[in-house]
Length: 536
Figure 1 (cartoon, rainbow, N blue to C red):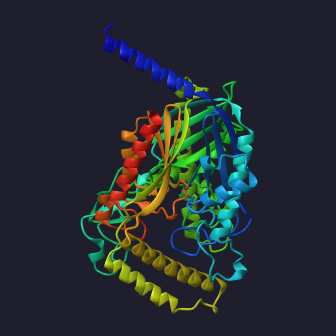
Figure 2: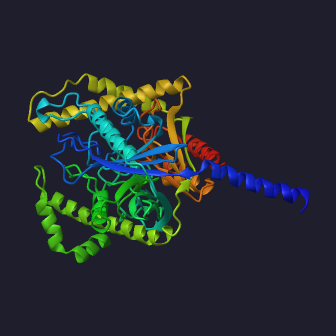
Figure 3: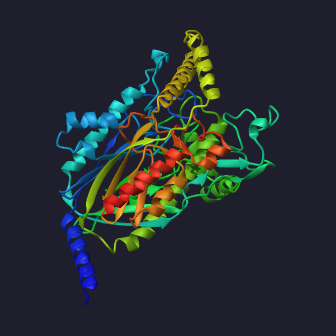
């Protein structure tokens, strides 16, 4: 053997010894806590004043602790729309309620259900008769529940095994429809002419439009799994990572729900009693959980598969005021779509488990890394800034409504507060940019053996996820959007691609996408660099 070959052989041995030396038996702990406060709050999204009438199905904070004595990670998934303002509360609560926890190891994420707790709206001007929890109150409450779950999971740690793999199944479809013409230039009264931020694209657009060109992007077909087992090879839980936000029960939905993840958990409770499910949404900022031009075919399938009686009975089971017959029909179909999605996920879960369980690991390398990032923002144009000042001036002159019905006062005052806060945010952002400021955020990266998790605080467009995964040194990379961070710019917002910015439309403008496509690529580069460091 020549010197060069001998050196190479020694290097391989040294690297193997180093890697083995860093690996250690992994301790696994699971727990979950209900995050239903038993109080009403404003249900986020859609820009309207929707307040809850109780809880339709359980909403949880689910926690998985992995600890090999050299490093640790505390994964937490929450059935809420966003984790952006919860993370600071988690850190504060951990120091107070569970000082034994490594508070710098939390990896929290939201599933993006639009029919859950208010995690960011103030209740300024909302009549006291509603007794609504403010976003601040909710975040403190959820933060403490997260820590309670983490405390239990930490105490429950036992040496176990992990396995991982992926299955195929579409859970998200592109929701940005593109047209051959500029929708903002259509005659008033035609579809799209009054759509906010209109251009050549619109979310949830009509596909039977004569100018429909196609979808801006495709779908992600991969559902990723990390399985945990005890030392007797019994399945104890799993992380499920898929590109779908949990917002099938939305719009007219007026009770808290974890959406299709509830239906997933129900299947697991029957097939694997005691098995935990921690849910993650990957890059789905431009995706939706139902199809576009196949929607009518999907509704036909549902009627034939589940039957008219199921749809009718489910509609009758809804029991809050404001419901109309169309709402009942809409939510009944969406319930069936939820069940379809859950079945698709579970089928992929079981198909993957059959082969992934053949390779379980007890000794693993575990590394937890936090990136502090300053990303190039989306510029605030002079026109948008002038509009923001105009909006602020207009609404500051209008007092809160004190007459009319309770709902009329609630609706108007909610709108007033949102208009003022939105304008103030944009103005502050413009001032920050003027001084050379960038968007400050954080991204958490975790290595678990031969796979990695890459979190970010955005509603991440799918392309960015694929850029990260394609260049990652790990065999599988679980990208997790809507992951909590302690950056100064708590609002992550959408992170749109250049293609989307060019097409315009909601989710691709300054109001919703505070970081530019250049900043998006900066996130990709920093994430890939960090992953390569974890792989060394």
